[in-house]
Length: 584
Image (cartoon, rainbow, N blue to C red):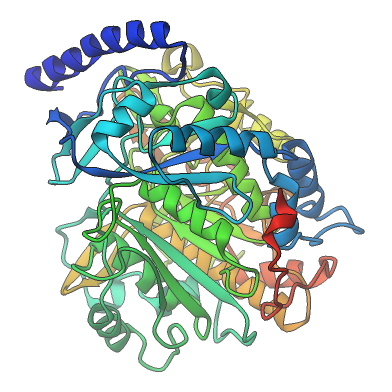
């Protein structure tokens, strides 16, 4: 961190002591603590302008969380013949998790006491928002907002000193945003090596490698989506240029994607165009959507873009929601407070129990060595999402693996992030596979690398993560990163969903219990490793901390999906109850 940035943070933390004294006098309690150290790519650029507008959102505590988790595990267990696939409708989820009336009232009364007009940001009131100036927000939260700049030029306003609330309001919420969390800005990596056009991971090569063949979508209601944040825009011209170059003779996508969110235009980002081009290239004839959020769009007050996506997903009806999302967003696990991260897990569970699959890139920093220790990446480390690591072409690429071949089709790529969560315990559905890995030789010294062998292990699966060709206004060859892998895997699972939907069956939903109980549906990667300054994770037979359970084999996954219990088919044209007063 630069000296000037350290001094700026110190000044903010000094201001905290004054805030703390005022807080004690005013009878408020701390909700989220101060930011101890800024990420190296961010710096404090001064105080936030007093008149700048914020969309302040209160995540109100939810009921039914234990039942939500238990239900999700039951309907996601492929061994549960009677309940697998019996997903809940969105209305049922909103009913189950609706907050107490008293908690909503505490937040609304608090906002009105400061002259603000509260509005529900969700159908059951578990998110309540108000637009306010920085000046009022600082009084509201007993906080100090700073202007924080990223090396890319992005700028946000955050309460780095932490914030506090009156006891009754603090007891009613999980956290408030935007406050202490700094968003991640991650760009795909680039290779300067020039390749022949047929040597890239094009849609045709990916379909061959993962045994998709000529399979295309048939279910009219099937939808898939990618997410984009912080001005990673989309343009039709770039997507059509990609299709024109690589989709000759095959069908990519199903018409142009539907655009959702406050940032779907503007300058196309390499990250965002990679996602939409890849997912439409892998899964032909499936409706696609592009969900984009800037956090700082011209017509809206500053907000937390990642949370805007989760709100939108929760508010979208079963008729309209995509059932597969691919997200390339990631950061260190400790970037969110524990309270906020716990709430994020609940939002992931709410999606999973509705039959929605959430896939996240695992990260591009290998073991992610920081100060000599392995640092897990989030949201990939959450037990409630599917983390996708990365591979590179092997000697026999793009031919799919075969028993007669002595050369691998894929090898683990060194950039693929993985490891063990420091926050979340290892789930039952992965224990036997992960323990087998930990008992093998050649692993990093746990006492030196500092990883938590009892934590949730990730990634869960992997896919190709290098040699992608992207159109983002200009042609961009040689793109790499697990941002390539996540939409690739998402497209394959979208085709598996399509198979079930076309037969009147449920979608797959939360994928992880299925993945770990059907290892033969994945190509085991046993060559290569991830690398970092303080060690490396080797790939091994079975699960490993580089490629998870391996890369998806569509043909085998299709067989598995066909044999699974039918579950509950939720028609994607079904109208939902509109009397939202029933939710509280």
